[in-house]
Length: 411
Length: 207
Image 1 (cartoon, rainbow over the protein chains, first blue to last red):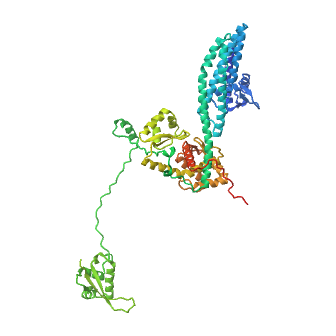
Image 2: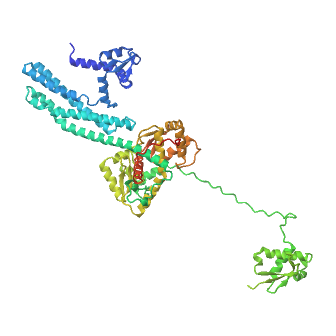
Image 3: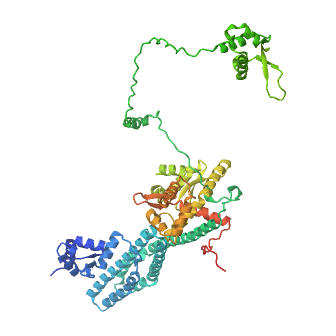
């Protein structure tokens, strides 16, 4: 006959044989014959072992007890998990079991009493495990701020739900503490044996659990407060955006107009931080050397030296390419203004004395001098051109220049 | 971690769990906060945190003449950007049919936002109008280019991080909480009520 130990081992062997199927059922939710490498036999065996339960259309789901076990092992979070739901029921079992032990002891049914004590031990452990598991789960949820939920509205709903769960666990703890079970066990037969496990597993942990619950409650309440603030923020921003839309000319007040600056206004601009390695520090020699080695060598720049050439003689000037020669009248003007002194010289008299421009008409000569004057060249600085005019028709606008007296002004 | 955290604070960054998770985790511990605060105190600065605790930043310990100039610059910058920031986030909220305002960690999916705006002619016009509000280089005037430019600007200003470049998903940083405080303050001093009615019909009623 198989012992209880053999039965557990056999069960585990069966689960192990179909581990892939179990894992698929846990992760995907349902499995069918197509997932079973034993062509349906795995489904059958696991169904017999109560690890899988029929679902719909020849599919199976993981038994909830096994799924819960995996959730606990893998710390999988579910929305609105019934965390700590069984704490009250488990606690309610203890007085019933202790009564059964006392009754069996009084009636002399020692074997039954031993069996009930064993059951009591298990129930105590189950209760302790349930409470500490629930607290651990709630703590994770509180610390990660319901990270598996995207929206704040959902976070808020979850937060409120778990605050309610915390309240229920807290009520259950109060009920355990005020149940008077310790006093009852102290005065009942075999009570000492029960008391030992009850104290070590439950009573001694009650203060610690209550403290944990208070911590969790504080975190959840504070987070709930924040999520509510976020709602208020949305309302505020909508109102402000509407105000900006209705008041296009709105400009926030100048800082100097504010008596008290808010904390956020004290924000300091950053510094432009830049560090350099100290090349004089021997401790940095090696790393600097490594960096230097890592830098690719600079490409060598080759400068090509041009060959020294030889001078060539200028080619002879081609006829008609002698360059621009000054004209005779230009030479004459140049000559007149360089030779003239303080004594005014009549341009017409000077022309008559100069044979090179004897062919130049007189009016052109005078025009040349007027032109020279108008150019205001450096060479005519200090030269005075005094026009000798002939009488012209009144109101005709004509000026008839008869001669020009050229002289050098006093310096 | 002290070194990295200090460098970030000194360079004027907001340290939030989205943008700098390691530095933020470091600052979550009281002992580390004291270390950082002691260092900053020696240079006339202090460690500050947003009201909701989502962003640490460096602020002036006291306000003298020089500090006042910096504070004025910061305030001017906020004044310049305020309208764009508020309008962008509120319009994006409306487009995404969100009940809550954006908070640190929230995602903004460019394509989803673009599709939502595109399917609503009113929003489309409003986002186009918003394009002229946001600063930055000019674009071709197309809605997608404008939206990209606005999102990039918000990223450059530290309000968003590009969480997934391939899918163009942005994430809101803790700096958004700084904006909450600015808006709350301005509404307070200017006496703007936060329970105003939503905008009614834009066309006047007939007699």
